[in-house]
Image (cartoon, rainbow, N blue to C red; front, side, top):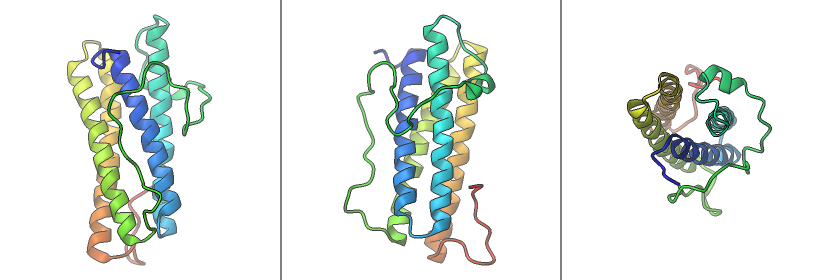
Length: 182
């Protein structure tokens, strides 16, 4: 597969979103605090939305319908198991490692999870930003710009949470409100 074609970029994005979902679900299960669990679960749910959007775009292109507005793609009725979706095309050559089975559940484990999440969101953002710059179709550019904004928001959330945890050694106290919507 040519990874620079629209379908190649969409397929790579699907793998990143699937892996992001699996990572955030594992991070939620291993988080040392219920607020951290809720934040990671919320991020996992957003990865599912992105996966469906990408899959709807891929299908539209394959069927010859062209790009569809991202709002329409987000509404597409696509049943899928986000942990093990049946994705079209081949798997991208590079993969991201997630948790190892022996990773401990602790605040330090939470910080490591946040750091991994930051790297994952950075990679996704770079993919979508590059695709937006190179897109010659206005709807494609809007789709990629939407995804870029989403990944930037995830990155900010993870970065602010990481800073708070490392500076305060706790998941939000009584005076602090959590940064997430979950």
